[in-house]
Length: 606
Ligand code: CTP
Ligand code: MG
Image 1: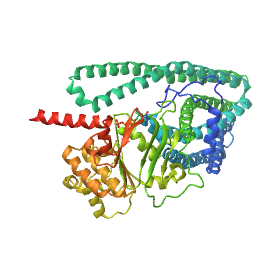
Image 2: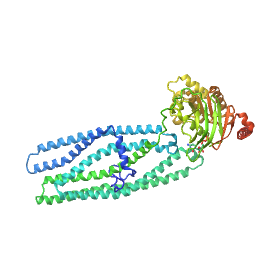
Image 3: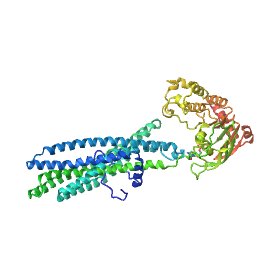
Image 4: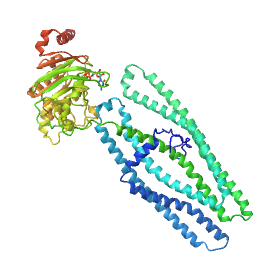
């Protein structure tokens, strides 16, 4: 089925009338790929096809049998055998439909299982840059809604479509055999229903799309009002908030009512056409019977057939729309599957077992978008076992350095060396094991404190978790939590303060006991007193390791062996703290500015 096909009569039937249809971009290609995904389930699909044929055969045959039975009774012949056959046919029909459901549920769910795991695997393998430019909620909806759509379509529509296909062809053949003029009449009514459905749903589709859009807006308003309720109250905007909500709510009511009324027309009108058809067929066949052209049995068969004939058409229109929406969803899924994954390790990638921990940035240039470099020709060296601090104004590119070291992103030009070799020569997994990181945006998981600290370290002794927490200055507050180390901390640590979250992520990095430690504003949320304590404990514990510290507070970096000052993505100056103080450049200005403002704060507090 191609795009240039005339739009089909739209939805009709159980609660789906005129639902907005999302058109797929490349129906054929997507269907082919979907078909590839059914590999392993083909045998089951074959069975399903067979069952559909049997199911439609029973649908097709029963009116014929009834007609023959009526004729038999009419002419005084015994009809018992025919009636028993009819009962057997109905029984078979029931059994076949049950088996159909059974097969479809099993096959459909297995295909979906496969799609969902493939998609999740893929997301895991995608580079972080992929997620930067996309709305996370939208990606989640692909994993859940789009996959669900495919599942429903496969399990509902496919069986129905197969059965209807067989039924329509079968009934048409029989009707034509029974009587050509009567078939023509039945055809006209089916055509009328087809046109009517198309006209009405053209209208309702627009209305339902509008309804969906207003509903989305309303959801957004509610979400924003709840999450920002404190700001709404603080700025006294309650009245405006209510007004906006009421406006959307009223619009929604208006549009939804219209949509419902319009789609409500369809069903009764279809019935009227169907009934008219029934009457016309009855009258015409009555006349034909009066002239002895057809038998009474044929009339009853034909009337039943003409009823059954129109039904699939109405349903198929509906199924086709759902089908289109599902295929469009599948397209969004395949879009992700086609994305370039993180580059795989070269076949000759080196293992990294016991690195010395010497890091060197050599003429590194990098931009998240290639045309906008964030780091420009950055070069500095971190000898093994030393502590290097990177300072610079906000947006200078400090966090970017860490993103490159951990290979969340790769450099555009230049290179980063670890123990004298380019990072890209090592196995990625080994490389990441080399770094203990505390990121600027602490990411915690909705599990217990203990599991968060031991994240990625299975089977650690509780004493070690405790020791790490102590060094990070977290032990005392953790023990005050209701269930101590077993307290769940909520989504991304929502139940903790910013400083508490940071200390847990420091403990997590410490427990990993990696040879190189990267701290990005790791203690920025702590008060000065706590920060000093934690920094002191950290420098004792991390003595002998290579450490890269990023910090805004100059006090935090003063103990570093080497300082790199970044300015607009370039290294403005570097050297030991003493050298830089003497030089009297940017670093000295920053130090003086901060001690000045600290002085000013102290005076202000007096
Ligand atoms: N940036 C970007 N895409 C990202 C992350 C950052 O385009 N995924 C840009 C930012 O807009 C910024 C620049 O890269 O202009 C440097 O960002 P970053 O290295 O994070 O700056 P920091 O020096 O870490 O700034 P801060 O002190 O505020 O953390
Ligand atoms: Mg940063």
